[in-house]
Length: 321
Image 1 (cartoon, one colour):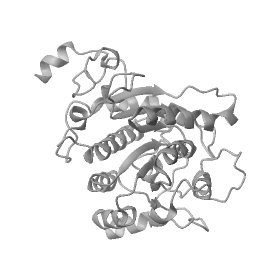
Image 2: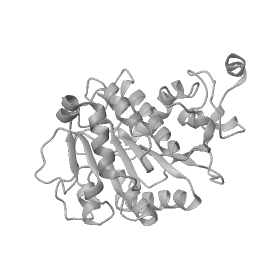
Image 3: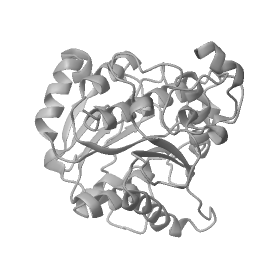
Protein backbone atom coordinates (compact mmCIF):
# COMPACT_ATOMS: atom_id res chain seq x y z
CA UNK A 1 0.00 0.00 0.00
CA UNK A 2 2.82 2.38 0.82
CA UNK A 3 4.32 1.94 -2.65
CA UNK A 4 0.98 2.68 -4.31
CA UNK A 5 0.54 5.74 -2.11
CA UNK A 6 4.02 6.95 -3.01
CA UNK A 7 3.07 6.90 -6.69
CA UNK A 8 0.28 9.41 -6.20
CA UNK A 9 1.11 11.45 -3.09
CA UNK A 10 2.64 14.85 -3.71
CA UNK A 11 2.65 18.21 -1.94
CA UNK A 12 0.84 16.77 1.07
CA UNK A 13 1.64 20.00 2.91
CA UNK A 14 -1.29 21.41 0.92
CA UNK A 15 -3.15 18.47 -0.60
CA UNK A 16 -3.64 15.94 2.18
CA UNK A 17 -7.29 15.61 3.13
CA UNK A 18 -6.84 14.10 6.60
CA UNK A 19 -4.75 15.48 9.44
CA UNK A 20 -3.97 11.99 10.70
CA UNK A 21 -1.94 9.33 8.98
CA UNK A 22 1.54 8.46 7.82
CA UNK A 23 2.90 9.94 4.58
CA UNK A 24 4.62 8.22 1.67
CA UNK A 25 5.42 11.19 -0.53
CA UNK A 26 8.87 10.99 -2.12
CA UNK A 27 11.39 12.25 0.43
CA UNK A 28 13.24 14.23 -2.23
CA UNK A 29 10.20 16.01 -3.68
CA UNK A 30 7.16 18.07 -2.85
CA UNK A 31 6.48 21.04 -0.62
CA UNK A 32 8.08 20.66 2.79
CA UNK A 33 6.08 20.84 5.98
CA UNK A 34 6.99 19.21 9.27
CA UNK A 35 6.47 15.45 8.89
CA UNK A 36 4.33 16.18 5.80
CA UNK A 37 1.54 17.55 7.98
CA UNK A 38 -0.95 19.88 6.33
CA UNK A 39 -0.36 23.60 6.65
CA UNK A 40 -3.41 25.03 8.37
CA UNK A 41 -4.51 27.97 10.50
CA UNK A 42 -7.71 26.11 11.38
CA UNK A 43 -7.13 24.56 14.80
CA UNK A 44 -10.59 23.06 15.26
CA UNK A 45 -10.13 19.57 16.71
CA UNK A 46 -6.33 19.80 16.49
CA UNK A 47 -4.27 18.10 19.20
CA UNK A 48 -0.88 19.62 18.43
CA UNK A 49 0.33 22.52 16.31
CA UNK A 50 3.87 22.69 14.94
CA UNK A 51 5.08 26.24 14.43
CA UNK A 52 8.35 27.83 13.39
CA UNK A 53 10.03 30.92 14.81
CA UNK A 54 12.84 32.04 12.45
CA UNK A 55 14.44 34.49 14.87
CA UNK A 56 18.17 34.75 15.64
CA UNK A 57 18.74 38.31 16.79
CA UNK A 58 19.51 37.36 20.41
CA UNK A 59 22.65 35.28 19.78
CA UNK A 60 26.03 35.82 21.44
CA UNK A 61 28.08 34.19 18.68
CA UNK A 62 27.12 32.96 15.21
CA UNK A 63 23.81 33.87 13.60
CA UNK A 64 21.92 31.59 11.23
CA UNK A 65 19.22 29.90 13.31
CA UNK A 66 16.60 31.92 11.45
CA UNK A 67 17.00 29.20 8.82
CA UNK A 68 16.48 26.43 11.39
CA UNK A 69 12.73 25.90 10.96
CA UNK A 70 13.07 25.53 7.20
CA UNK A 71 15.97 23.08 7.52
CA UNK A 72 14.26 20.97 10.19
CA UNK A 73 11.09 20.75 8.12
CA UNK A 74 13.08 19.54 5.13
CA UNK A 75 14.98 17.01 7.23
CA UNK A 76 11.73 15.69 8.70
CA UNK A 77 10.67 14.40 5.28
CA UNK A 78 12.70 11.27 6.07
CA UNK A 79 10.48 10.30 8.99
CA UNK A 80 6.70 10.20 8.34
CA UNK A 81 6.59 6.91 6.44
CA UNK A 82 6.64 4.71 9.55
CA UNK A 83 5.75 4.95 13.24
CA UNK A 84 8.75 6.13 15.29
CA UNK A 85 10.95 3.28 16.47
CA UNK A 86 10.63 2.11 20.03
CA UNK A 87 7.45 3.89 21.08
CA UNK A 88 4.89 1.19 20.41
CA UNK A 89 2.35 3.60 18.97
CA UNK A 90 1.95 5.87 15.96
CA UNK A 91 1.36 9.50 16.99
CA UNK A 92 0.88 10.66 13.41
CA UNK A 93 -2.03 8.24 13.08
CA UNK A 94 -3.51 8.79 16.54
CA UNK A 95 -3.32 12.57 16.82
CA UNK A 96 -4.61 15.50 14.80
CA UNK A 97 -1.42 17.42 14.01
CA UNK A 98 -0.97 20.42 11.73
CA UNK A 99 1.91 22.58 10.66
CA UNK A 100 0.75 26.04 11.69
CA UNK A 101 3.52 27.73 9.73
CA UNK A 102 5.94 30.35 10.98
CA UNK A 103 5.52 33.36 13.23
CA UNK A 104 5.12 36.62 11.31
CA UNK A 105 7.09 39.49 12.82
CA UNK A 106 8.89 42.69 11.83
CA UNK A 107 12.59 41.82 11.88
CA UNK A 108 13.47 45.53 12.15
CA UNK A 109 11.47 46.06 15.35
CA UNK A 110 13.21 43.61 17.62
CA UNK A 111 11.69 45.16 20.75
CA UNK A 112 8.23 44.10 19.55
CA UNK A 113 9.26 40.49 19.01
CA UNK A 114 8.69 39.02 22.50
CA UNK A 115 5.07 40.18 22.79
CA UNK A 116 4.40 39.13 19.19
CA UNK A 117 5.59 35.60 19.93
CA UNK A 118 3.72 35.36 23.22
CA UNK A 119 0.51 36.39 21.47
CA UNK A 120 1.15 33.82 18.71
CA UNK A 121 1.47 30.95 21.19
CA UNK A 122 -1.35 32.29 23.38
CA UNK A 123 -3.69 32.15 20.39
CA UNK A 124 -2.80 28.53 19.64
CA UNK A 125 -3.21 27.44 23.27
CA UNK A 126 -6.56 29.24 23.52
CA UNK A 127 -7.82 27.15 20.61
CA UNK A 128 -6.94 23.92 22.43
CA UNK A 129 -3.77 22.38 20.98
CA UNK A 130 -0.33 22.26 22.50
CA UNK A 131 2.69 23.43 20.55
CA UNK A 132 6.03 22.10 19.40
CA UNK A 133 8.08 25.03 18.15
CA UNK A 134 11.00 24.96 15.74
CA UNK A 135 13.57 27.71 16.39
CA UNK A 136 15.25 30.04 16.03
CA UNK A 137 17.65 30.92 18.79
CA UNK A 138 16.96 29.91 22.38
CA UNK A 139 15.61 33.27 23.50
CA UNK A 140 12.29 32.31 21.88
CA UNK A 141 11.53 29.96 24.77
CA UNK A 142 11.01 32.87 27.18
CA UNK A 143 8.07 34.50 25.33
CA UNK A 144 6.62 31.03 24.74
CA UNK A 145 6.84 30.19 28.45
CA UNK A 146 4.91 33.36 29.26
CA UNK A 147 1.94 32.07 27.24
CA UNK A 148 2.18 28.63 28.87
CA UNK A 149 2.35 30.11 32.37
CA UNK A 150 -0.79 32.12 31.66
CA UNK A 151 -2.61 28.85 31.01
CA UNK A 152 -0.96 26.44 33.45
CA UNK A 153 0.61 28.60 36.13
CA UNK A 154 4.33 28.32 36.95
CA UNK A 155 5.80 25.70 34.65
CA UNK A 156 8.32 22.96 35.31
CA UNK A 157 11.12 23.40 32.80
CA UNK A 158 12.98 20.40 31.41
CA UNK A 159 15.95 21.97 29.66
CA UNK A 160 18.49 20.12 27.49
CA UNK A 161 21.50 22.31 26.69
CA UNK A 162 25.25 22.85 26.93
CA UNK A 163 24.47 26.14 28.72
CA UNK A 164 22.13 26.79 31.63
CA UNK A 165 21.05 30.22 30.25
CA UNK A 166 20.64 31.65 33.76
CA UNK A 167 23.33 34.31 33.60
CA UNK A 168 22.37 37.39 35.59
CA UNK A 169 20.46 40.02 33.61
CA UNK A 170 18.05 42.32 35.42
CA UNK A 171 17.37 44.47 32.36
CA UNK A 172 14.15 42.92 31.16
CA UNK A 173 14.24 44.96 27.96
CA UNK A 174 17.34 43.04 26.79
CA UNK A 175 16.82 40.16 24.38
CA UNK A 176 19.55 37.59 24.97
CA UNK A 177 19.63 33.83 24.46
CA UNK A 178 21.84 33.31 27.51
CA UNK A 179 19.80 35.06 30.20
CA UNK A 180 16.16 34.25 29.49
CA UNK A 181 15.80 31.50 32.12
CA UNK A 182 17.18 33.84 34.77
CA UNK A 183 14.36 36.17 33.78
CA UNK A 184 11.78 33.38 33.55
CA UNK A 185 12.56 32.26 37.10
CA UNK A 186 12.71 35.82 38.41
CA UNK A 187 9.32 36.47 36.77
CA UNK A 188 7.77 33.47 38.51
CA UNK A 189 6.74 31.72 35.32
CA UNK A 190 9.15 28.81 35.87
CA UNK A 191 9.30 26.83 39.12
CA UNK A 192 13.02 26.12 39.70
CA UNK A 193 12.41 23.49 42.39
CA UNK A 194 10.68 21.24 39.86
CA UNK A 195 12.92 22.04 36.89
CA UNK A 196 16.01 20.32 35.51
CA UNK A 197 18.98 21.31 33.31
CA UNK A 198 20.42 18.33 31.38
CA UNK A 199 23.73 18.19 29.50
CA UNK A 200 25.30 21.34 30.98
CA UNK A 201 29.05 21.78 30.41
CA UNK A 202 29.71 25.51 30.78
CA UNK A 203 30.37 27.41 34.00
CA UNK A 204 27.79 29.54 35.78
CA UNK A 205 27.91 30.85 39.34
CA UNK A 206 24.17 30.47 39.90
CA UNK A 207 21.82 27.84 38.45
CA UNK A 208 18.86 29.59 40.12
CA UNK A 209 17.83 26.57 42.18
CA UNK A 210 17.34 24.32 39.15
CA UNK A 211 18.70 20.77 39.44
CA UNK A 212 21.67 20.26 37.13
CA UNK A 213 22.51 16.93 35.51
CA UNK A 214 25.64 17.86 33.63
CA UNK A 215 27.00 16.05 30.60
CA UNK A 216 29.60 14.12 32.58
CA UNK A 217 26.93 12.80 34.95
CA UNK A 218 24.88 11.63 31.97
CA UNK A 219 27.92 9.83 30.56
CA UNK A 220 28.91 8.23 33.86
CA UNK A 221 25.54 7.29 35.36
CA UNK A 222 23.67 6.34 32.20
CA UNK A 223 20.40 7.30 30.58
CA UNK A 224 18.13 5.26 32.86
CA UNK A 225 19.52 6.92 35.98
CA UNK A 226 19.07 10.36 34.42
CA UNK A 227 15.45 9.66 33.60
CA UNK A 228 14.79 8.46 37.15
CA UNK A 229 16.17 11.71 38.56
CA UNK A 230 14.15 13.83 36.14
CA UNK A 231 10.88 12.04 36.82
CA UNK A 232 11.45 12.29 40.55
CA UNK A 233 11.84 16.04 40.30
CA UNK A 234 9.10 17.03 37.85
CA UNK A 235 6.56 14.39 38.89
CA UNK A 236 3.25 14.91 37.10
CA UNK A 237 3.48 18.70 36.95
CA UNK A 238 2.82 20.55 33.67
CA UNK A 239 6.23 20.48 32.02
CA UNK A 240 7.68 22.40 29.10
CA UNK A 241 10.59 20.62 27.38
CA UNK A 242 13.09 22.83 25.58
CA UNK A 243 15.92 21.24 23.61
CA UNK A 244 18.90 23.31 22.49
CA UNK A 245 20.59 21.28 19.77
CA UNK A 246 24.00 22.12 21.27
CA UNK A 247 23.12 19.70 24.06
CA UNK A 248 24.44 17.22 21.54
CA UNK A 249 28.19 17.04 21.12
CA UNK A 250 29.45 18.95 18.05
CA UNK A 251 30.38 15.59 16.54
CA UNK A 252 26.64 14.92 16.22
CA UNK A 253 25.38 18.50 15.74
CA UNK A 254 28.02 20.91 14.43
CA UNK A 255 25.44 23.25 12.91
CA UNK A 256 24.85 25.53 15.86
CA UNK A 257 26.00 28.94 17.02
CA UNK A 258 27.74 28.08 20.32
CA UNK A 259 29.10 24.51 20.12
CA UNK A 260 30.78 23.00 23.20
CA UNK A 261 32.72 19.74 23.30
CA UNK A 262 31.90 16.86 25.66
CA UNK A 263 28.19 16.79 24.90
CA UNK A 264 25.60 14.05 24.68
CA UNK A 265 25.56 11.53 21.88
CA UNK A 266 22.45 11.13 19.76
CA UNK A 267 21.85 7.63 21.15
CA UNK A 268 21.84 9.01 24.71
CA UNK A 269 19.28 11.68 23.82
CA UNK A 270 17.10 9.13 22.04
CA UNK A 271 17.13 6.82 25.08
CA UNK A 272 16.39 9.62 27.55
CA UNK A 273 13.54 11.11 25.56
CA UNK A 274 11.86 7.74 25.00
CA UNK A 275 12.17 6.74 28.64
CA UNK A 276 10.58 10.04 29.68
CA UNK A 277 7.25 8.69 28.39
CA UNK A 278 4.54 9.46 30.91
CA UNK A 279 5.66 12.94 31.94
CA UNK A 280 3.04 15.66 31.67
CA UNK A 281 4.61 17.48 28.75
CA UNK A 282 2.34 20.35 27.73
CA UNK A 283 4.61 21.80 25.06
CA UNK A 284 8.15 21.98 23.80
CA UNK A 285 10.65 23.33 21.33
CA UNK A 286 13.84 22.53 19.44
CA UNK A 287 16.16 25.50 19.02
CA UNK A 288 19.57 26.69 17.82
CA UNK A 289 19.77 24.63 14.60
CA UNK A 290 21.97 26.75 12.34
CA UNK A 291 22.22 24.83 9.07
CA UNK A 292 24.90 26.96 7.40
CA UNK A 293 27.55 25.51 9.75
CA UNK A 294 26.82 21.90 8.82
CA UNK A 295 27.23 20.92 5.18
CA UNK A 296 26.06 17.36 5.92
CA UNK A 297 22.60 18.32 7.19
CA UNK A 298 23.13 16.11 10.25
CA UNK A 299 22.20 18.87 12.70
CA UNK A 300 18.85 19.50 11.07
CA UNK A 301 18.23 15.75 10.94
CA UNK A 302 18.93 15.56 14.68
CA UNK A 303 16.58 18.49 15.27
CA UNK A 304 13.83 16.81 13.29
CA UNK A 305 14.26 13.60 15.29
CA UNK A 306 14.11 15.47 18.59
CA UNK A 307 10.95 17.30 17.50
CA UNK A 308 9.38 13.98 16.48
CA UNK A 309 10.22 12.55 19.91
CA UNK A 310 8.56 15.56 21.54
CA UNK A 311 5.42 14.76 19.57
CA UNK A 312 5.63 11.20 20.88
CA UNK A 313 5.99 12.44 24.46
CA UNK A 314 3.09 14.84 24.07
CA UNK A 315 0.85 12.14 22.63
CA UNK A 316 1.83 9.40 25.09
CA UNK A 317 -0.43 10.65 27.88
CA UNK A 318 -3.19 11.67 25.45
CA UNK A 319 -3.66 8.43 23.51
CA UNK A 320 -7.25 7.46 23.02
CA UNK A 321 -7.92 4.39 25.18
